[in-house]
Structures are given as C-alpha cells and as structure tokens.
Length: 123
Length: 291
Image (tube, rainbow over all chains, first blue to last red; front, side, top):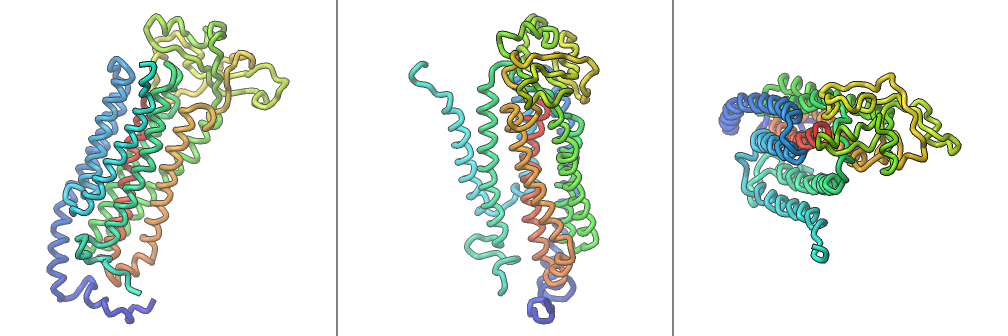
C-alpha cells in the first residue's frame, strides 16, 4: 500500500507535535507503571504451579479433597490472569455486562451436569 | 475502506470495536470449553471406584509446558506494553519469544507426549478374573489399606499383532512398574518422575480381558476426554501462534509505521485470546496430569 495515500498518517505517527502526543506520553507512563505488576504476576503463577504439583502429592484424605484443593489454587491463578493480564480489574462496563451473561450461562451448563444425577423416582 | 473505531472508542459502547468483538468471542469460547469440562466432570464422577486412571501422564513435562505457557503470557503482555510505550524493537523481541514458547508447547505435545501414549498399552481385566492376575494387581494389599482396586494391567505390548489377530490367544506385556511390583507401598500413589515399563513380562489371556487397547482416545473415558480437551486446547495454541506470527511479520511493522496504536490494539486482542488459552490450561494441567 502506498502510505502517502493515507491522510491519517500525520495525525497518528509516533513523532510529532499533535495534541495526541501528550495523551500518548501519559499512556506510556501508565503502562510502564504496570510492568512490575505483570512480572510479579508471572512469577506468582509459576510459583503456584509448583505449589499445585506439590499439593497433589500430599494426601488430603480423599481424592475429592485433593481435587478441591487443586481447583481452589487453579481458580486463584485464573483470577490473577483475568484481573491483571486481561485487564479485567479495570475494564469498561460493556465488558462486564457481556461476562455476566457468560457466567450465568456457564453456571447453567454445569447445573445441567448436576441434574444428570437427579432421580426423583428411586430417591 | 477505513475500518471504523480501530483506535477510538465507539460512543455507545465506550470501547474500540475489536475489544468488544474479542470478548464476545471469548464468551462463546467459555461455553465451548465449559461444555467439554462438564462432560469431563460427568464422566469422572460416574466412573466406578479405581477405574479413573491416575498418574498416566508425565508430570515434569506437563509442569514445564505449564511454565512455558505462563511465560508466554507474560511476554505477550510485555509486547503490548512495549507498543504502548512506542518501543518497537522490544515489541519485536517479546513477540518472537511468545511465538517460540507456543511452538515449543505444541512440539512437546505432538512429538513427545502424544506419541508416547500411542505406544502404551493397557488391558482391563474382567471382574471375575481379577483374582487370577492378583500378582500384577495387588488388590488384597490395596483392600487392606482401604484403597480402590486396580482393574487394568498396562505396559509395552510386545506382540502388537494380537490387537487385530483373531487367532492370537494372549497379550505379551512388559509391565509398568505399578503392575510389576503392585504390593510395594511406593506404588500406592503415583510418582512425580515418569518411570518407563520394566523388563518383567506378563502374559494375559485375551478371554480374561474386558477391553484392551493402546492409549488412544477410544481406550477409556479418561483418554477420550484427555485427547479431546488437550487437542482442542492445542488447536487454540496453534491459532494464537499463527496470529502472532502475522502481527510479527513485516505486515505488523508497516501497520506500526502507519498507526502504532492500531497495532497495539491488535496485539492486545490477540493477547486476550492467548491469556484465555493460558487460563484454560491452568485447569487442564491439574485435572489431567496430577489428579
């Protein structure tokens, strides 16, 4: 593509004196503050992976108890990924609305699995 | 034609369009994986005691792959942050590392983990014949300790033609450690390190076998769900690698020169997909490898 055909280049190119640059600098500053958080979350996730592996060799009495412990750790890790890496800790309202629907339907889906054991006749 | 709202927010949603798009897509992905996970829960909770296998996968390799995927989640978010700070070189390197992590993850799966399973063999013994193979199953020992019984004898199959040959009367197996020494308390629970089949051979008569096959999807509900879920997950990793490679190639450089914020936003949505794939693996790893 011939870039000179684009009228918008001048406005959005990385160098320039447009008002957008002030905004860009601000964004860059905010992002650089988050980098430490990203690295720390990465470290935490790897540490908790090791913890999950270790806990799976600890006998919590029953297999169900071991699965429950592993799922609690996994949910914590998944929460970190969603909140920090996927920026859900600070997102627009529209995204939360979409996710509320998703949560409702996925819980319904797992409830159907639970219903598979519901037997009103012999119980 | 100019694509609308690639970098500026659409007034009614308050977001640039691709961000809404990727979240709607991820919402449908949650339902896709949710369906498979609920099938897994159903199959597992309905399995008879001792039937759901435990400790068949290679834990150190799975742990390494988990760490690789987490590392790539960090590098992709760093790639995005680099673009936001207009550091293109840094972006290029972080993206390259992300792509390599994805490729390593897939290679480990397809070259090592899956083929190793395809070469492994297991035979489920009929309920009334379990006593006959007590020396390989050690069920008296397990019952004393209050542990669920073993019903499968596994290892390397030496006479492969027995799988298809109607005239073959038995399977010759080099036993896995757990069947070679079943009353050893060390074998009551799986080990962290993978131990290959032993030299000890066993002969199992075909008529005593309920069902026998290599560790393929049709071997058991466990392997059916393992291959389905890790296969679909692997397909997602492949998809992510393809998109990242596209954004990393000169096409990305060109877009950066034209509109750096547009490339940053594309990397952000591709990254959101990648984090979701990482998030799914966080649940797959303990459920299939560890428990």
